Length: 303
Image (cartoon, rainbow, N blue to C red; front, side):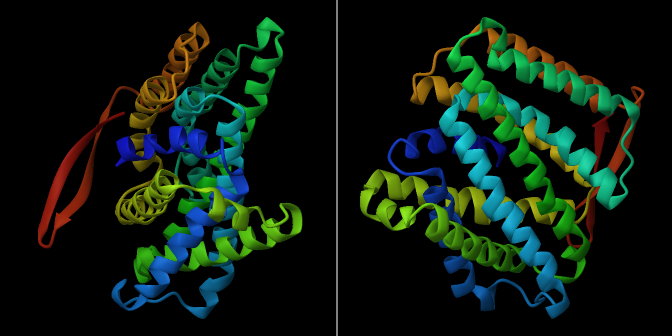
């Protein structure tokens, strides 16, 4: 699943050459909301409670409005390869959010890991050269990192109600609120850019938008909820580490982006940060993940 998600960043870069980042976010999550609401009767028996609506509204505005706008704009301003590598910081940010809001314990070494990851961001941006483009890259990377904090709200706000609500219905309501917020922002600040984008996109563009909506959002976010319902959020976040190198490779092969030494040393620093931050005293812990009814699969996490 993470290999499929990795393709989203080159897609952002490709699509924002013809439409705005706000229009792309509005179309992506608007399509999600429409598809999920049409399929509502088949999304599971457990509906959100009325008391859950404030939580889901906040989730929708943060995750499906603020996060994608920051993320897509970061990719548009910077390089898709850089932003794919920055995905390596996502598990650390997710772990911190889980510790603060979900009371999951985060060892001291994860803070050191986060610091090393930030050094990697500076290396990716090549700010020491004093040139305009790397400085623009730094701003793009900061926007992208801010989107991680917004995306952490998906796990923090959603996990507490997963035991009594269908994951896809949580996503349906969240994308509905997010789409409303996107449309309001589009009408207020972007002068209806989403309607212009509808006329601009060609067949390839629509295929890519639908891929983002169906594969990356509906399928991907649902699988994420299914897994964190049974396991700790900071453990599931480790799976995101598949994305950085895949995204960098796609950016070079598809978009023709040039590899630079900043990406090499930046990726080394980020990986070092992860090695420090996600290791726990060299011990191995056993996780129990339900595989199917009446069965339990025991897997080992190297910690």
